[in-house]
Image 1 (cartoon, rainbow, N blue to C red):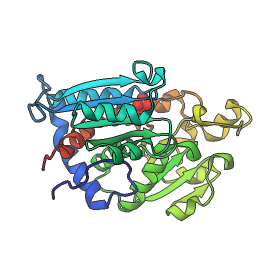
Image 2 (cartoon, helix red, strand yellow):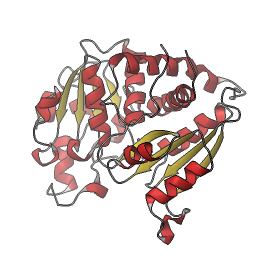
Image 3 (cartoon, protein in one colour):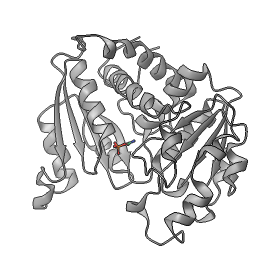
Length: 307
Ligand code: CP
């Protein structure tokens, strides 16, 4: 298979074959990060701009590390370090980046659809590193990579996604991806954090977290997206955690070999108890490790690489 798409904008438009192709490619990049010399010449001479107009630790750092491990030149731009603060529009900024002839622009923006708009405007490949509450495709791909490496496949897996589903781009991308790959996806949260018509996306919806995680193979916890909340949609953090925190009692409802996942950043004691986040079932830091290989694979495929 040869990668045909110019951009990676969302999981919704990817086919299961395309997802498997990305994950197969990512698997082949894992080993590079375990070497003493973590660098290969694959993308020598290529330029990657990481254009992050919203805060990030994991995504921005792992894209930069991924580019550097492949010997690309990587440049980071943040909102505060760009001329956006002087009133330049996003479109003008994108056209100026295009004029410098990079190969790939990785964009995170608080507005849903911003990477899609820029992808239509400029000739370079765009990777969506998270757009508002819309999609976070590279997070979902690294989540699926982690699950596939640990469980072998998605067929027959019960996967529970718990928390602020309505405002989570991670939830949206994972729902699109995991249902496509054949998993039995359950979502849970307070009614105010569950968007209407969710069951049209092929998931089972619960307000009782226990029902969602009972006999689950994977439990993915999400933080409350405080930065995207326009209303007070729960009474208090204490009450939220009483009903929706993954603690030792609740984890006992899932299968003994359940994978505990979280895209980060964690709010310890709110959606996940510290001893569960750091416990034997947790693969939270493994997700971060695989995120580098996954992003190496995307940079490789978008610059014409083949498996
Ligand atoms: N998971 C994730 O997107 O983390 P960052 O916001 O730190 O990039």
